[in-house]
Amino acid sequence: MLGAKVEPVEEGRGTLKEAVDRALGDFVENSQDTFYLLGSAVGPHPYPLMVREFQSIIGKEAKRQIIEQEGRLPDYLVACVGGGSNAIGLFHPFIEYSEVKIIGVEPAGKGIDTGCHAASISKGEVGIIHGFKCCTLKEDSDIYSIAAGLDYPGVGPEHCYLKDIGRVSYDSVTDIEALEAFYKLSKLEGIIPALESAHAVAYGMKLSRTLPKDKIIIINLSGRGDKDMAQVMELSEYK
Image 1 (cartoon, one colour):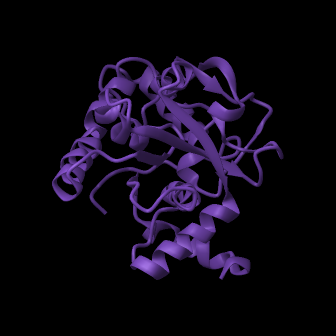
Image 2: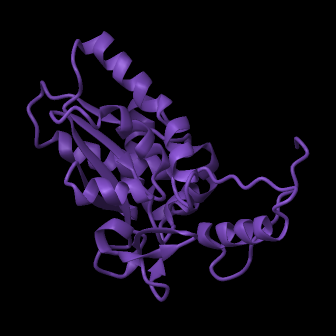
């Protein structure tokens, strides 16, 4: 509508990975007059750093607002992690505060032990993908998530580092749990989350049931669910 040329990608599974493959290939062939942009914290340097800095406005505003409203920092941060851009944006301004527990939520798909998921940190191995080193799922894995923005076989290198040093913990949520959270937030708060964000909502709800009522959890809503409505409505078993 605004003049962009959109190229559909039909190679392989037609997922985010194949779209990045195509974009990088075009960039290599036409680097003299082409800019490469990817809205996730992945790829070769300096792309993960650039995306983190842009996305960190999320964490900076969350930090300022929670102090204004509650007079203190939160006890927990929760965000979904595919490539990890929204999560690293929320996490970064809080990393230095050890009292804030930080949790990234990966897509467990049809089950973390089924092999049909995209939980790169939880189940991946160190490898190279798209020009950067990270935890990545093997090429023969059935990489899948109900949320299109999470079905990527790798994860941002900074997330891998934060896991290795023990600053951030990573867990996973299944499709069914994410869909239940999608409906719950929509019905109770009138906020329709993206299916990606619903993974964080699902984990946040489970976490809250284990904590005293005076604990504060910030759950990051990385996107709106308008784009997912047709897909969700097709899944009649969850209505």
